[in-house]
Image (cartoon, rainbow, N blue to C red; front, side, top):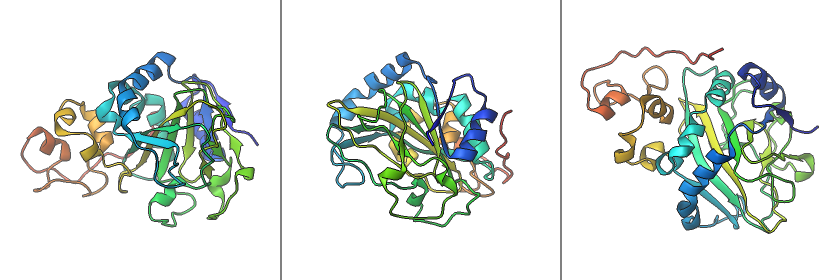
Length: 281
């Protein structure tokens, strides 16, 4: 079974249906090449300065460059992509709110071995989430073409419903080949891993993930984005970063102030009521 590809014109309802059934899919050419190139240009110095991974899982020939909201104005367009947010809201519908979990450019260098097959939700201390509760909705945007030879992400379609197993093998997976600007969407429950790069070029993907707002974020958004930049961002992006009440009474500041009010210097207490996470269509 290969990974399903849908066109950029697909609706959130259509995308979510495939995502729920198969755990992963590709939306072809969802971002323009020009936008991807802008992000690459804005992040080039940061990627160059990023050290390689310190262990086999992170990749000893792989760079993982974060803090994209602070470092790249163009990347914010992908973080806030309306179609992706709509799909994320559908997959994470059991939570009142969801938030950015991490922002990261993954650059897999030549001769990199494949990553061990895993589930991203294991980051939450291997907590045994119910099989029908999705804590994460993940994306990898292709900043270069993804091919089997250059280390395309490998997934096991349909594995979001499988029991926990730590030793799945790459032979069970299929490569997610896609063009620059395309987007791989996958549940945090699906088994996957970075592929082995047997080419002489770097395979680059932009990993943006979202999680339910009552879980801790993998990337600390409050420290990754310094105050002088945070103060310039619009409220919708700030809420997605975590400057919101995540659920009843989760995340308020001092005397029960809304996080945005505290950030903007407003005073006065707030109620605990929060709007539910409702898909837009």
